[in-house]
Image: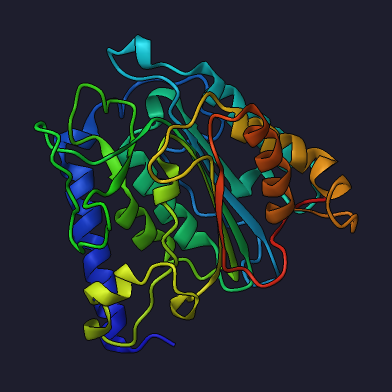
Amino acid sequence: MKNKLQAKFITLATLIICMALIVSPAYSTGLNAKDQLNRNNNLNLPKVNDIQINAGTEYWALLFAVGVYRNNPNQDRPSMLEAVDDLYDVLINSPQWQPDHIHVVKGSQATGQNLIKELIWLIQNEDGDDMSLIYITTHGSPLLAENGYPIDIPPKDEADGADEILVMYDGFDNPYAFIWDDLLNFFLSLLQSQGVCLIVDSCFSGGFNDAPFKGNTIEDYTLESFSEGLAEEIATQGRVVLMSCEEDTYSYGSHFSNYLIDGLWGLADLFGNGDGINSAEEAFDYAQSLVELVGYQHPTILDLYPGEFPITS
């Protein structure tokens, strides 16, 4: 149970970060762009009022794919937009997933501001009985200065001195239009869900393997609580993170996503334990074996979820 001091700290920190991002010109570009590919009218971010939030386990998903980049068509990756549609289709064909529990954001709507808004939507709607899935695909990179010097935004928790970043829609002509690993981890750690599955398909995605952090007082949020990101004892939720490659390597195409999705249609369980459920772990094993068969990249996993994280059935 979070005490009052911790709750005030988290609320204040969240407000500061969100307000900074929402008012920042770096994240305001593209907010009015009409994106016919956006399935759920995500800018309004309605609360789900027609369900009983505490009625039992519910499944929530945020599916976020950039795929196109403002003024940089040479960086466009149509396969990312196809993959996010395919992932939506496989989820919605499984009985535990409902359309109003899944938000899809892609293309010109895939800005940093909208990603923060969607994470807040997820935090507002899920609760401790639920399962949450977050899928992000875009270009990834270590955070470097113009001179190539690595940047580790506080807390300084990177062995190589550089945070990992995910490039947003306007990220190739706006140097501040990115989301970095610690910020994403902060928002994920505010989720109460009994299980959280994060899937990142990008270059250098292996750097998004931070476990949830927790603490009972402000003093608990120290450098050590962040830098011990892989220590299971600091996990406050059962989290599993599936990443398309290692922290210091490239990811090619959308092969990892495509094989994961194939697995979630049934091949994961067919080559897994055969219990009728396609879990995150089974889907990862299936995708990893095929991706590594090509030989260019090596998917990685952080699994702090007890047992197997169920996704489709």
